[in-house]
Amino acid sequence: MRPRDFFPLGKAYGEAFCNREKEAEKLLGNVQNGKHTFLVAPRRYGKSSLCEKVLEKSTLPWTKVDFHMAITESDVESFIVGGANDLIGKSISQVDKLSSVIKTVVKKLKPKFDISAGPLRLELEISSGSSPAENVAEALLLIDRLLIEKNKQAVIHFDEFQEVGNITEGRGVEGAIRHAAQETKNLAIIFSGSNPHLIKNMFENESRPLYKLCKKLPLPRISEEHYNHHLNKASLAMWGKELPASCFERIMTLTERHPYYVNALCDEVWSETQTVPTVDHVNACWEYVIEGERSDLIKDFLNLSDNQRKVLIQIANFGGENIYANSSSKQMDVPVSSLRSAIEAVLEKDFIEKIGTHYSLVVPVYRWLLRHQQE
Ligand SMILES: Nc1ncnc2c1ncn2[C@@H]1O[C@H](COP(=O)(O)OP(=O)(O)OP(=O)(O)O)[C@@H](O)[C@H]1O
Ligand SMILES: [Mg+2]
Image (cartoon, rainbow, N blue to C red; front, side):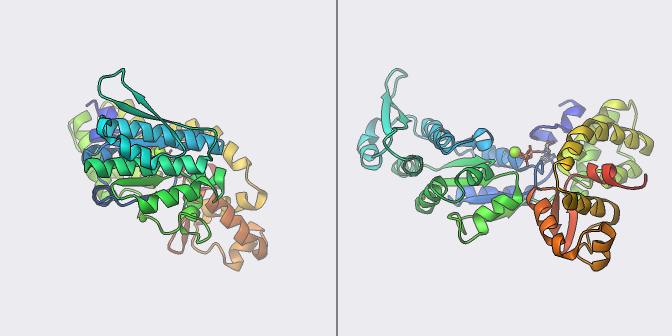
């Protein structure tokens, strides 16, 4: 592995993957026991990386359905039916002796049998006479029945699942997924998504159909101790020496251990310096990371209302401990009566997160872009 490959901006694989042992063990236990999981974390915390690592390790057949391109209910339907076809192919390649099971379960979808590739293979097709909800439930229940027949297990990973909630708003397909998920025995489902507030709402709001169906697995930031080990390994591989403690501390302070920003900064540091870096190198590389992100982040910021922007500026400059205090409200020039809805809105949009009683900015770069005084 080249040292720079330790810090990918996309999914983390192999040696680029730092720790997450507890979470990986939990997720592995869930999928091996056929339990559904709801993986919750803000954007770019490592949900997809964790799922792929665990699914590879499980050696179970699995498929991923990514909903980020879904716009309509029929997109959701065709993505799920496509995922079901893929998973059936991977887990039950031969369906020769299963036609009676298929006939009993499949009432809405059209099963097609492909004999061109040797053993008989099944391909489900959507029929226009039935609703997306019926087709989705049937596809998921069929996989489970086939797995039971074959005494096998498999996993389906629904990524960017908040999009399903956005599209269906608790009706139709979402209800069908719940219905199927309650019945399955050998098919485990992982639900993950990138807007924690919204996706939480889908699973924890009693009026929504996926309420209480899953084991919740929160994914916090990676600890300093684990990053210390990880960064030292990369430093030894690159420069033959451990990373100076001052540099490590600076990296932790600047990135606030946000996994994407740790990688963005370290990728820069590791590629820019010929020998072990100094704190000045780290600072210069951080400026470069900020410059790269500035225009996108400012654009997102400008899409917020005045009060929502004031909340972010307040947290960037004074922290998020006493955000509801009268003094903060005065300082922000936001009436107490409007403050709650402004805070709720930026929570929902994933700009800030709440840990205990503390509110903080999700993206560490905002602290630099929104502060009044230079550090
Ligand atoms: N365990 C890990 N160790 C080191 N880096 C990681 C780890 N997990 C994720 N990362 C890094 O964090 C960033 C985000 O990872 P990933 O795409 O898996 O997150 P995500 O939560 O699925 O993001 P999104 O919300 O965009 O779907 C990437 O730069 C990735 O390399
Ligand atoms: Mg992802």
